Image (cartoon, rainbow over all chains, first blue to last red; front, side):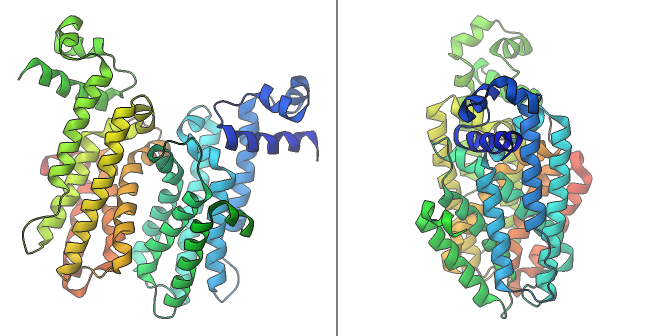
Length: 220
Length: 220
């Protein structure tokens, strides 16, 4: 792996484990056993690294939360979306811990974040609409976009909410799976007869993942 | 009004308008035209004032978000709950802006906050159950509490979400009414035939309140 990529991945790991606020570029260099000078050869500052991590985040969202091109909509597609939402929360959890502070320091990142929010809401709308077209959901046309937006907001606020509630600084996988299961809870009342079994199956799956907690990470 | 109460109300107003972080006890004393010594006669520090404001918040929630004792459940009752949720968001908006920071500084307040969260989820569950019993909603028994909890989480995260999204430091009434309308969106798919007209009526009402923005405050 190139030094540049090593820095990005090590930073993501350290930010997630110890919080973005407490990790400096010196910590990152020390963790990798490289000199601060070497790190500064690749990145101007910590914000520069965060921008690169955000690119990975965008990539994950854009590749995984996009309407399927297959004509048929399977239960498996729905689960793939939910898993991708979980991975986004887990893999980039440091963003959600103090998003407000991170964005406040960086106008360019904020613009990218708001753009990603918009495109994610749009993708979720399209996915919901595909499910409506496939006869799996019955959502009034005028509510599809607001429902998509509400789901996205709930997910984006989930980690912040859980951290306020607990006395821990870290979030557990089971708490994130619980967040994903709330997405199902919000969509489920729109399930048609054709999809009610699919929704029951998904609910059981996420209930088991919540129960297994850490072990479940390997299943994703 | 007694000096003590004047301090509490002026502080709430200043915190809401300028943010809790930027307002000191000196600002509060100056705003009221009293000496800092007079303020300190009544309160040990700012945190002490925040605790008193939190008591007003608890009072508002406990008095207004509690299951009605009337046997019949009216559309009016539902709107009264939604209005109370809006008032809580609006009147105590400074809490929601940096809840995490406020609670981090004060263990006792955090305990009170978590207790209030629990009792609010319990009250919302009971209200939903009353609507189920009245034939207005059809929610599977095992989902009532998680639905109540999800609604509460969404409302509690709403202001933080909106502030991240906008470039403003302040929140507009219309943005808060939009939050309230999302509560309706989440509950509406469970509406029975008996209540679908009631839900349409509520949705139109909050749509008008969103459109009117500030003017709407007088209607609550």
